[in-house]
Length: 177
Image (tube, rainbow, N blue to C red):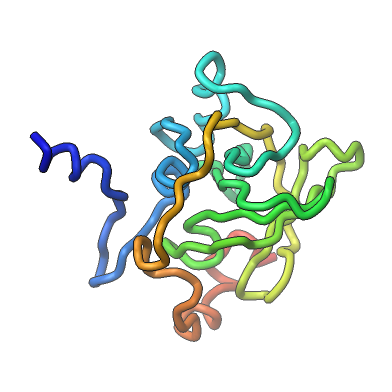
């Protein structure tokens, strides 16, 4: 029974060609404590009645991106730090590099009302905020502190050499425009 519990508690990621590949939703679930399953675009509605939701970022909360034509499955990312009332740092997976993890990357509220309904997010291949504006549902509050992991718990991260993907980034990544 203890072995089963340990296996269930371990972070879950797919492996392809010897590399660990993370989707945003399982990674956000592991690090935030928000226990929602399914595609990222379903998280906001699934959270209703289970978790508090709101427009203000809090450390450990999950930013829920709306699905768009560029992101038909949506996206979720954990807020790892509040920088200002219009800027946070996110920790998330499967954004700049397919299956990769990014820690403490910049996200800026670009909404006219300052209500976090639209954001721009750091995009590694361009070395800055991406050109796209993404609609956001809001934030899902876990009610607890984010899980603390060792650096080696999740591989690969963007600390790895990205030279193999930068050349193809404009054709494959959401901010290619």
